[in-house]
Image (cartoon, rainbow, N blue to C red):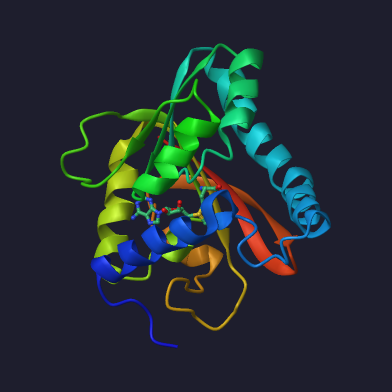
Length: 219
Ligand SMILES: C[S@@+](CC[C@H](N)C(=O)[O-])C[C@H]1O[C@@H](n2cnc3c(N)ncnc32)[C@H](O)[C@@H]1O
């Protein structure tokens, strides 16, 4: 299937997907929408991904013993905000910022999590915050199929990570046929996008598909 060729096609897809699916845009877009099917997907993520993300960040936070600035890149409707709020209570605080290229996602995130800070990211060059101690990116890069956009995004994420900072990346690595909005990349390809980072990772299966959670620290 032909993949998106331009950034405009990419953005149109996400605008339309959020308008149609609202909060179901993430996790539930392919589920049957029955409550049971939704709970099953949520349970998989809660058991297989959340402890790894909390563990990776918890180890970093307890070693660094200071309040950290966290960037949730491609935050969607703020699904991870409550997890990070919990971490900020357990450790010495987290200053959270969620950014997403889709205005409707940010509107929904603000509505659902009024205490979170969520911002529309429409231009990587004029974004004037950062760097961040922790950068989190969950199932976003797999959706960036336009090569020029991927290149700029990876450069941005590398730039946003402070020295000594932690990148936590969660992506799908199942060898599935590409869709217009999704592409297969191996764990090695993702590791090579961040040559300055030393990674450790864990593989998990979610809804029958292989994913990984990688944590990498910048020297
Ligand atoms: C599958 S969703 C994941 C949302 C969230 N990370 C989560 O795990 O719940 C992918 C998100 O990436 C956002 N996105 C896609 N391309 C982006 C880009 N170039 N910059 C910022 N956000 C992007 C989409 O709007 C969408 O909200």
